[in-house]
Amino acid sequence: MSVSLLSAPVLDREVPVVSTPRRSVTRLLAPLEFVAEHSAHLLSKSLGSFASGGAHYALPRYLYVGPKGGGEILRVGIFATLNGDEPEGALALGHFLQALERQADPAQGFALFLYPVCNPTGYEDNTPNARTGRDLNREFWRESTQPEVRFLESEIWMQGFHGLITLRSAADSSGIHGFVQGSVLSESLLEPALLAASRYVPRNRETQIRGLPARDGIIHQGYPGILQAVPGLVRPPFEVTLVSPRRAPVHRQVEALSAALASLLTEFRYLQAIAQNI
Image (cartoon, rainbow, N blue to C red; front, side, top):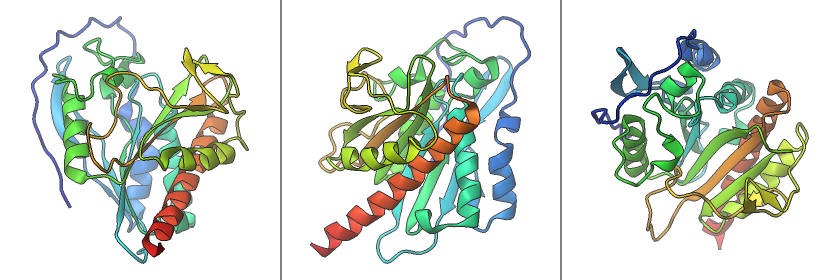
């Protein structure tokens, strides 16, 4: 299994941060580390290293190998906390892994590559952007000098994912919604995922979400530089971004995102089985 340990310099000037207590990435990752220590299915191995503000950082990375399925192992990358002030996705991954330890069926046939804190300096500082002032989710495939982006781009290149899932939250959203791109299957996967999530939080039914046209909580138009598969692939993976409403209680957002993840995997495995039998 491919592992990238690319090193990258930090070329952008760091933005001074107001002196406030920094949040602990270690504490945020505690639920995932607990599962990794006690599970035969989950491996913890950080990705790369870089320096910022006199400290050294590595991107947390976990690999969950589900029960053996009947065909090819399906590789899915799941990314969270690209904006440092959005820890709900990381919390949802901890919740999801704990659920898989009790009932692993949703992960049957999958290798799940989990990146719960893609922006560790932003999380520590409780800011959307990295400590350099850059919005990491506008930097992908644009020759970025951000080490976090370069590490993740390398992973996306090397692992050849069948699907990419990004977990986000939004303070200005009335309900859960999502973005789709990549494979034509993406919308077929997102619809049942939003339905599963709506048991815990409302679904955003507005015709415009964050200035983009939407229908039943599904947005087809993205932004330049967002985390996505390698551009120009003949057979792109499915790409889904799930966005929880930050105004909802955190535990409800976590349950909603976890339910949506289970739905995405179950539906994708089913569609793959159908395709193989056609």
